[in-house]
Image (cartoon, rainbow, N blue to C red; front, side, top):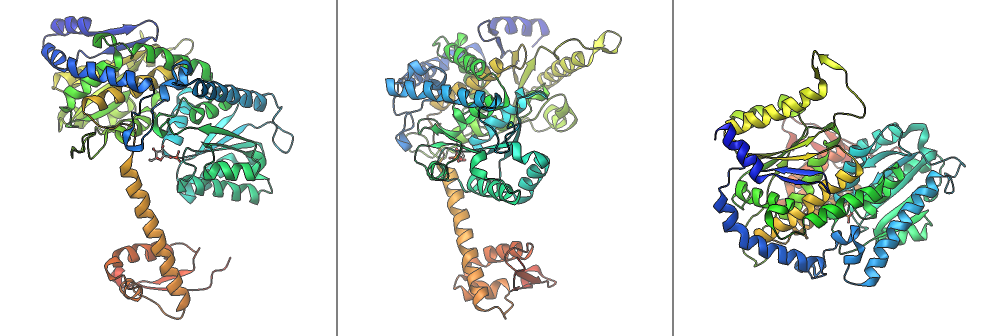
Length: 533
Ligand SMILES: O=P(O)(O)OC[C@H]1O[C@](O)(CO)[C@@H](O)[C@@H]1O
């Protein structure tokens, strides 16, 4: 398509909203006009389903739950006054707690201010807080955030080492909606151990964000932690960043959570419109349906040309793939749905995988995120007439053109700058787009059955490890091969898992398992020796 024709399509399709500052350009998505017309009836159905969802319908039928993340920034929409009140009340208590920490009314046990924040969580209980912290963080923040977002001992050691001598001034926020996620439980126990080693009373540094009466909630209450904030079953983990999950860490860091909520609220108003051309989330969903043929035929590459938005793709991986990546649709048909999401930031990624995007397998569509403001204040020139920000914009525009010229489609989202307001807008935009797209492909966007399978499989491995150690303790003089061990446990079919468990045990001192290597790894012998604790 000639440039001037593209310019006409750019103008014809452009979505621009002064209320949210959001501009959405789908001119590089090659769907014909009739495509929108054909999809319109299904989009109208999606709008109707979304209205029911916001009205308190059981929009997550597999778990028999409502879906209420939009109420978090519009409590008046909640289906009962009680829910409105609990939403408003929690926001008030989040802000009050953060204020008390900042002004010293809530102090570290040594009498000093809390200056460090260690968030312990995983999935939606970490990704949202991490994206908000990184996109809006600055050197002068009230508290410096750190994260335990995995059950990796070395990873946690590195964080504790980074916190260093500031551990006495560290507030720990343990986040788990279910209150039972093992990685988060492990992170909490590791943090407790680190505080204990430092002679600190963990409970006097600890706050919980979790479901009322969950395992974590009960532990925090019994151990008399500093505070507990509620999560509710009608807020999913991947859509919880505008609940206390995201708001508490952000408020403690010193981020204006009211502006974040206002951005989300205003975006929600725009994505409630049933005129597709006026609804940016619908335009995204329509573009995704076109690009992926409504069945994930192409991947979604997220390319923000802004360092602050680096973690947005990781956040969107959970929001989009945990919502849309489903085996069955709402009618129980096997559909194997989803859209793969990846990306980091431009122009950096141009020196990594953009080569393949430009010339290689055309199995994706790109989403550029353009931020107009280069930096607070002014920039010096890097050459006559050009600043580094000019280059960043030039690389974005050049990559968009280069991809389109080689038949690769793209969407461009433009915001004025990265602020709490625009972060709220971007989060709300994608939450709604996922919901509308899920309606188009008839899947439940609000449950995650596949993850349970992984959790169960991990439980099986740990149980088998316990049986192996018990066997080795009962025959300490014996050195087992993995096959002998599996046979002795009457689990010959599990020999490979036994091998993987033994190899990991022998690589660490904790259980006293030693390996005598053989040429062939599976012929190595494993024996228990006394553990020097
Ligand atoms: O907040 P929780 O209950 O610890 O769950 C953490 C994450 O694990 C999941 O349940 C499964 O990945 C996510 O949906 C959730 O964000």
